[in-house]
Length: 92
Image 1 (tube, rainbow, N blue to C red):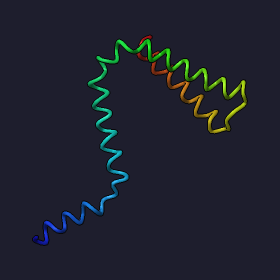
Image 2 (image 1 turned 180 degrees about the vertical axis):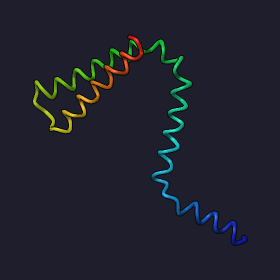
Image 3 (image 1 turned 90 degrees about the vertical axis):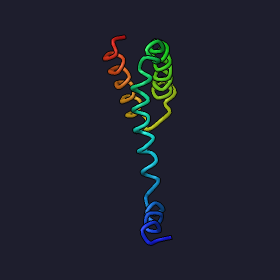
Image 4 (image 1 turned 135 degrees about the horizontal axis):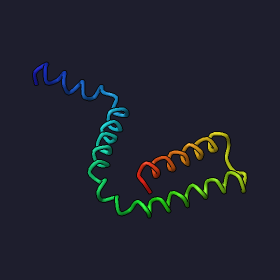
């Protein structure tokens, strides 16, 4: 093997794959979301119902059962506001 090819192979092993692979998957996910927009259009009411059930359960566990800490409260409220925003933008 020549030095150029050996250097390229060594460079591939030196890359931080823990950061590169998730970045590639996120880009593929964004492209997949653009393609799947038409397919998920019919599933939106079901996804809304499932989201409401899961968020309702999260709020039940936080405020009725008194489980969780400050982080879980913040994450639950951010998720709730994000879901309401996304579904209102979607027009449902």
